Length: 234
Image 1 (cartoon, rainbow, N blue to C red):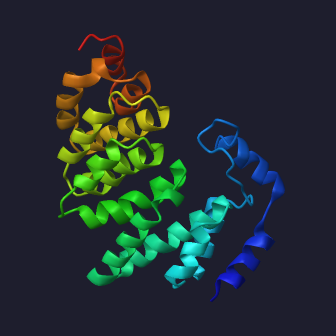
Image 2 (tube, rainbow, N blue to C red; image 1 turned 90 degrees about the vertical axis):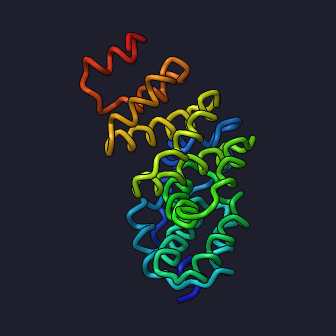
């Protein structure tokens, strides 16, 4: 199936009213993180279904989707990439990992990062050197910093927490709430698996954390303990 037929399907599925909702939801105004992003107004489950129908799309066509001004086309490109990565042999995985890094600037909103970073970068680096994540952690680019922390979700799912804590340490001073939320979320995911390990980190750092980060990290704690953290009484 071709890129042309995929775009014909997208044209039929487009919903201008839903597109207006997305313009607000993804903060596309001047100076906001999603400035200038455009939408067809297609809901994520529909995009996911379309991606499955075109899961064998060639990389040059996937790249064309990634460079689209339409958010859903980039979303579908990344759904296809993650599917191809998961089904690929080691050689194919390396090709997709390199392709993802080469086109990283098009992974440029939080949903695009969150659906793909752990499944491609995280999966590829699980048993490899992770220095590239620390390089991203110090980037001026918001999305590279979010990719750094979100890639570690794959490590967390495999019982490996050190990289998440190391990146979280660096990002404690980050000024963007999308980073605060992502770091807090990953700390909470560690806590879902081993709350003692999460708390060992929190007890050292919670007073240095942005409020949103802390709230996300302790969201599942019993209310009494949650309040103790929020009041600085731990």
